[in-house]
Length: 314
Image (cartoon, rainbow, N blue to C red; front, side, top):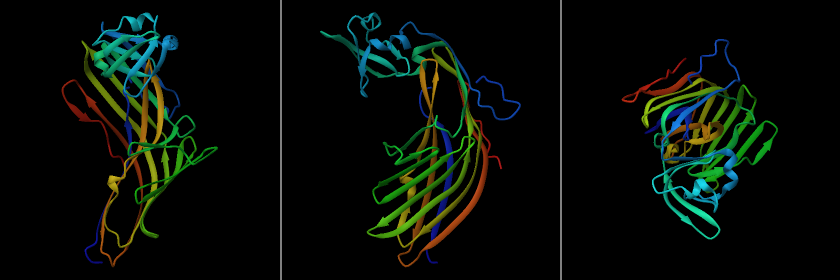
């Protein structure tokens, strides 16, 4: 076939995706237990709205504007530059405070953990199993898609972005998930390309550890272990010119919510697919491959340098 080039790279990634152990390795294999440490000293500029004080929070919006009850003492004491940590909700820096007739409005901007924490340790070691505790949501190009079918342990999504249509199905079986992806490109009524993944991915563990000293992050260690799967990939491309699916992915498949002290952490399972195919207008191609993977991902930061903490496995 003339002038045909195909580059196919598929990676299943597990990525920490929110602000978020010193836990021992489990000697007897998999366990569903989790270990969480939240032992910190806050800076003098930090105000924490505890769980039992959330009733005084009247509302907030995506721009970081918070409304509190007018007589809520912690809100009245806030000033520009303070750090506001709201249980299970947000970590923000105060821009302005205004007392109105019926409430206190606090405008905020982004803040970081080291601005709130002077000294301490945060860590977690949590299992991520494929069950209903995983939030069934697809995030793709800034949009969220909820399942079109959700019955028992089965989830299915169908949506379109431009000339690409997606069918994603998962059967959540606890220790593993049966997964199927179909990504199809159409021009008019004709299918010009179709990419499928079919197989299983297995449960994994996510571990992170952070140490702070004098409002400085001195240690960060993150790893995902037991990343395993068995997949078949197939690609059918008709005369479609130059297609680059990498513009369409990655996709967040599942989100695992974890509370670490007052801080909400989301562990995201993502699929990243990169395809670059050039097919002449009088040509077509079919490619398929099966593979298994058994890997570990992660990295370390010692206060000065980053290093990988991963292996590709078999």
